[in-house]
Image (cartoon, rainbow, N blue to C red; front, side, top):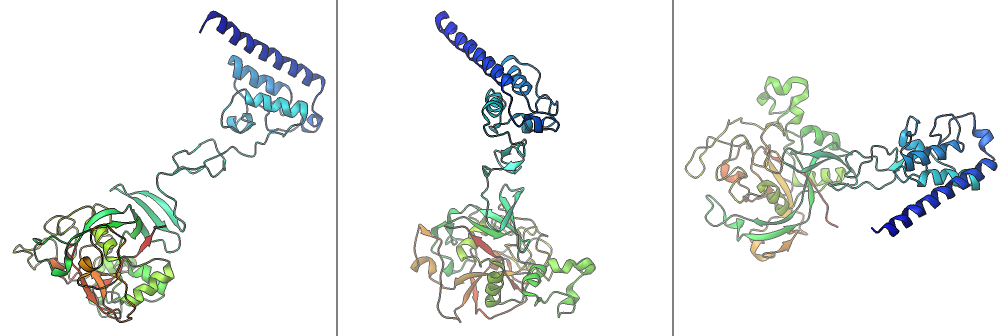
Length: 414
């Protein structure tokens, strides 16, 4: 900057300050008519804390803004001194006060600093006391669900406001559905493999528990509960304080699961959604690799898979829905425990006849009320081959067994 330019800039600033002093002098001669009524009580804009708003306040702010004078004395610094509510203290605030005092312009409002008041937002403003709707989030806000943070695996988790059930937000995208031709103990209906595109969706973190089913359906059909045929399989830990209610609900038909989802506002997962959730980015037979890790699955582990004995303790009943280790999406019990109903009607040739690579959100529907429905994941009494990520099974929609339950989803597609 040249000397001439610098003189012009500082000269303009000096003229501006002199002009402000003239305005203040005019204000002294013509006080605001409301000052008398306000002078004996704390007022918004009382930055020098003398219990009144008068010309000393804009002068105080001018000294602070231009000359580095004493900061405002008021207890809530931003609320009382940021009178124009632009989230900063600058020359606009004394100008605002002077406009009010001299011309009767809009009076300061210290009822709250507007801004984003949600601590979970990227732009959370600790000084804001009134939310102005400007919050921005890394994770979407979903009507009917409360954001609960991120899991240890890094995925956003939500709680359904109505049922209290935990859900995980899966981003969707492309994955390969089905098993390769050389996967051990595969079935022909698992191919040919195809690339599938999925929209984002919420999926229950756990299988639906007996408690969650009872709270919605007002009854509990499960085999493994006190007073039912399977009561003898419950140990002392499960009988204590109603812990058995955290076992997955079973002995429920596809039709009943659809009714549960309708009442709760959910849906059954499609086959593609279920397999994507189970694989959690893997391409192996199980989410744990080529063999089923006993820490991740509850199944008939004494039976061999591909010539090797199974791993893990053989419990001989269901286990609580959150007891075993999660997969890379933070989802529990997708291998074993209970088979899980899917929305699709069963079609052995679905992958070949209903769209190849690139199909978006595939689903097999049927108008026949008795059409076979898909089951996925295997159960506590099933061997490892049925617990594979790509394994498909089916039963009629009215069938109930003590190995079948459900895991709902909430689609997020537009």
